[in-house]
Image (cartoon, rainbow, N blue to C red):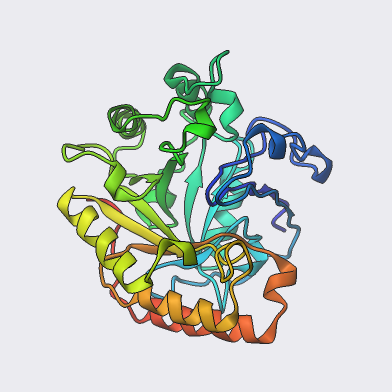
Amino acid sequence: MFAALIVAFIGCDSTQSLDPNGSLTPDAVDQDAVADVPLGEDEADVEVMSVREPQLASASFAGGIPIGMAAQPISAFGRRFNGAKLTVGPGQIMDVLSAVRSRGGRVVLMLAGNPRHYKDGDGHFSFTKWKDEVNDFKGINFSSYIQDGTVIGHYLMDEPNDRRNWNGRPVPPSVLEDMAQYSKQIWPNLATIVRVEPSYLGQNHRYLDAAWAQYLARRGNVNDYIRRNVNDAQDRGLGLVVGLNVLNGGTPNGTRMTANEVEAWGSALLSSSYPCAFIMWQHNSDYLSSTSIGSALDALRRKAENRSSKSCRT
């Protein structure tokens, strides 16, 4: 039996996470986290996943690039989704990764958890506190999951550029590079990813591997958006994760994307051979219960699966 109680409390444009060192019971949701970070351009998310399922025959990754969602339950890995962004604690990571591997999944892992754990008394980012959170995983050997591709990246931070997240002081690219270097000291072969568009980043990154471009309708023409972000990533020697904000990125602004928008805009992002993964914000059972939305996502899965596999490492 997989008896993993899996926490995924993951933000698209605001990373809100459960305490990675805390309990995994459903009532352990960090309810005050929604108020910790201002709900602005792309709102916060809260999701708890409790999984208890029988052991399944192992499935292999279907190929192409991973496609999936943030806050995605393990049970959703399969025919439609084979990728996700998950926040896990040190006490659960091995069970989570075993379950993901058994379903042929690929995941980007957030290890540092809720940003309140790595802010100083003034609400600014603290590199020292961030390292303390990451250090909780130093004694856990999950290298086999890195080697076989189950873990495709270490999600260092969400929206370092948004001053609202850090009490008016954005986290500069030089600090992101320091974070990536620290991660590489522990996991040399694990891609380092930050969720910010590549235009924010510098030209001289040695340890940071990939940026992240999450499309919403208000970003403008989707074809221009993907071309610009690919060009910016290439110019900086960075990989690129792409995705859609399906819950808040539709037309009019702030609405859920329609099936037509999901398929059209997702297809435009997947028209480029450059991205290494396609991760959307975020898993929502009500939204996914729509037959038309399911059909649109299935179409994107086929496109992602037909792409050439690509590492997020540069």
